[in-house]
Image (cartoon, rainbow, N blue to C red; front, side):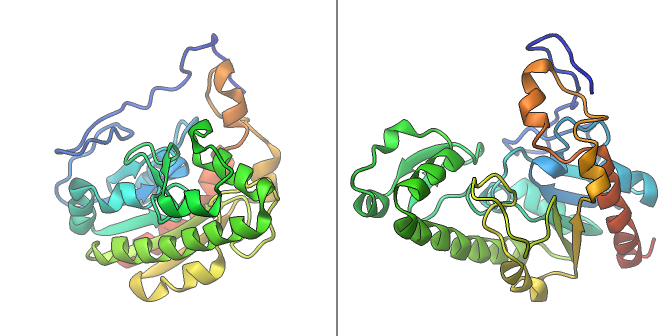
Length: 276
């Protein structure tokens, strides 16, 4: 583990912008010309606390530029509404789309921030009707709100969860339909899609099941499933770089060994797809 002075960042992510996008992606910046592979995803794709995340490892193995469009706590909407990202993905030799959680996107029950998708903005009239006794001004993050709703009323909470799952499938279909060329749908987590998860809503990608993933199979070229091994998870934050203040967040992330496993699974699939 690497600890720095409280409040100081331990890792330089070389933040950069592409075109007219309002999003600040992880660098170093790549040229969106010629042959390259685009990676769309959440905190894992971005590689929070990871010096060499799996897109960079794939780049080394393929000897082909890999553009990291990972976005921290991303929901589906942040990509489907970004014209620059969609254009870059459309022009790529192949695009890897990481499966992200269903909770960080606007839906019939609540709205999230258009870029900081884990931020809860407001409850809809429907939500306020279903949960009349709840003061939604108390919530700032989606997961905190969902935990509170489940504790208050497991029966009514199921309505929200099912809405999120249905909306996720619809939004993913929309996103994938906007990406031309070859695509890989990537599951990268510490558990399999059909594995039972804990009751604290801590597992990511939240609410996504194998059945939901399978509905997307006709829209993608390949599906790659990477479940970080026990050995990768056992080392905890070893090899990560973070400040002391970031230690609790780092403990929730998959470490470098898991990223190496993801790259090892992706590289041959992408190589075969693009003729590398």
